[in-house]
Image (cartoon, rainbow, N blue to C red; front, side, top):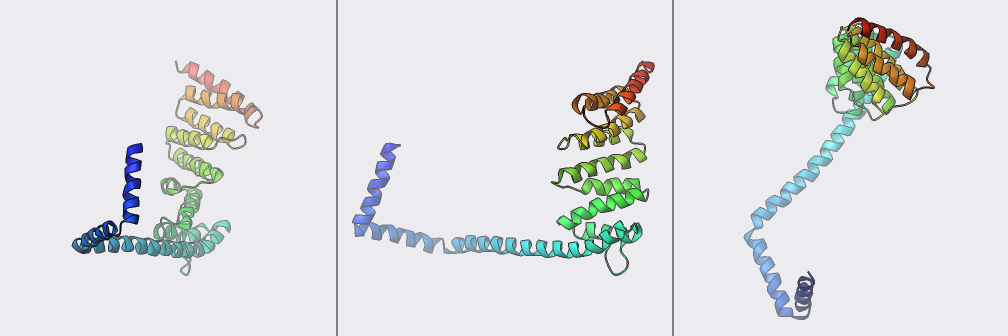
Length: 237
């Protein structure tokens, strides 16, 4: 490694101190550029296209997101006013959540539209559609994402998919586990497992509440449900 470094240093000194060597090296570079001119131009053109394309795509996405946010304002207003049909489908002047989620897919507002649409559809009893939209929603907000998992569980439970619902509740409980919401989701998981006749898993959920969240408001209820699940588990053996 040291010899290689010395060699490079000597070559550099020769280039600096000997004009003929420097001229020869520049001539070689010039010949290379002339011979590969078309290829080099193609490479530079490609790089320029990528840079310009990235810039245009960023601007397009920013514009799309702004438009979606403006459309969301009215849709959320209808949602909060419990005018769910207008929230979902629009009012003829403003777009509804379903169209926003589809048209502005990939934007922050479009992503949030999936969440609102899922909740609205759940309220309307359209459980399969609700689950579909809630599964499309993704967020770094640990409370909102866990809530989306739990609501997906609600939609599945309403369709009689009890085991799948329980799994979503567990996913909600485990997502950035915390003392306030996790016990609530574990209770729902336990009840869903009981509905699926999986009493051993239900008992595990209640045990987690009792042991890991001893200060939570759900502990007393978890103890009662655990005793029932254990009794039912024994009767099924």
